[in-house]
Amino acid sequence: MKNLGRFFGYVRSWWRLLAAGLAFTFLFALFSGISLGLIVPFTKVLFGGEIAVAPKSAPEVEEAFFPRIEEWKSAVRDGFLRLFADDDPRLSLLRVCAGVFIVFLIKGLFNYYRQIFMVTLEERVIKDLRDDLYHHVARLPLAYFERNRSGVIISRITNDVQLVRDMAGNLFTTFTQSASLLLIFLVVALAVNWQLALLAFLVFPLIAVFTAKIYRRLRSHSVRFQEDMGRITSTLQETIAGIRIVKAFGMERFEEEKFRGETESYLRSYIRFKKASILASPISEQLGALGAILVLWYGGSRVLSGAGLEPEEFFLFLAAVLNMMQPIRKLSHVNTVTQQGLAAAGRIFEVLDTPAETRGDGGRIIDGVRDEIRYEDVTFAYEGKKSALSGISVSIRRGSLVALVGPSGAGKSTFVDLLARFHDPTSGRITIDGVDVRDIDLDSLRSNIGFVTQEVILFNDTVLRNIAYGRGDLPLEEVRKASEAASAAAFIENLPLRYETLIGDRGIRLSGGERQRLAIARAILKDPPILVLDEATSNLDSESEALVQEAVEKLVRNRTTLVIAHRLSTIQRADKIFVLDKGRVVQQGSHEQLLEEAGLYRKLFDMQFSERPIRRAP
Image (cartoon, rainbow, N blue to C red; front, side):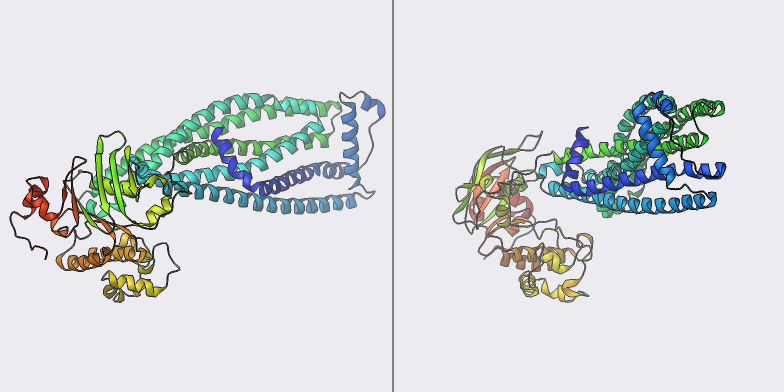
């Protein structure tokens, strides 16, 4: 119920659509009841030859169990019949037929507007939910994505939202319609003969007890098969993303078997769910048939004995009760879909309840580095793991080129991630000109930092939109200048549509060097005061490396630059080198200073260059 309440919180913003939809739904149900009531005049004309309006006598009304209600019912019945009464039975029949046409026309119009308002409400609510979910996911801390498989997260935004959408459609359209029709037909049945109605409804408590047990099972089965669907999505996403590796290692059959295992698990869970779901319908119908048999026997006996129940009234009652069966079946289906939707909503709200990044909105706004960046006794540990950084205390002067060196797992990436607040320190603090980065507005902080990573991230879009990422209003001339500075203009001009050329998923239509130069052009266009380079040339051939290195040298001018270095030949011009090992800065100084020390840097240097000479930087 908590998840359902939170879902209806999204409906509150669109209450006018809901009110209009409910109004037209009730009018549609009302005219459905009126169309059913036309059975009485039609039956009278067909079997009696004319419609006679004869109020019940006073003694008969006084003997009724609910005399006042009987008076109202008699008045309504007689007023309704007068609409079709005529001395000529053929004219009465013509009036009945005209009434059927008019009632069904009005009912159809109400049904049209009912659906329009309810579908609009459904789509508006789901759009708000989907937008909120995407907005929140985009602002979750990096640690969340490190803990959860990307396919599972995608499943929350696609499969789970779709299940909630199905629930919304059933609640707004099917439930409101079926509940309104059920109410109207119930009123008709009670108005005709309340004793018969009570007899017919004796089976309802049995149906309610049975369905309550079924739906408890449905929800648990729904949770299982939706979790299995999340694993299927995750496996599929991982296979597609890593298809080169899958093919290179000849692991197609292995991935197929893994996928078959996931789909088999989903199949078993879904069949268990459908078994419970399918069981509900025949048992409910059988119990309903039991009630119908009791009504047929009791009502038919009263008609045959002439005990105050007219044949046309009995036909109307039977029509009302039988017409109640379809809304009841639909309500049973609504509950099935609702159980799936609530299970999906629970997972969606679990994501929405995950704390987002502390953005420091309204905090300090910065414009570059005026003095220095300082790490003050910074320690950081990933969740459930030992410290990745321990007691880091260093300073980085404005405009300097600083290199981070060390073996794999030494904490180099974590060092720069903390500066951009992808994570926050477990203890200690990082300051820019004396201001703790946690007190700086997050958008302002990250707008001052540019990243060029070893793994280039490009989007399935045009060259222009990848360079001017998120800044579609930039003139083409500025993009060209950035491309020239990144040594990318020449190959872009040779593309089929130049800057409007689509580069494919993750830039697959470009070479590694071309992708890297696009990333550098993007960083140049952003023009960040602080730059982070994660060995941008390590995976390139000699020609591409030379072009990218030229672009990098242009990019780092007049910026505070942090370089994560895997190849020591790229950092000899650094103003300062921090050597990290097991999360600690074990050495710092210039290239020449560190070579003179018998420390880790010298060891790494000798390992890389013991078998070939290097060209010393001038």
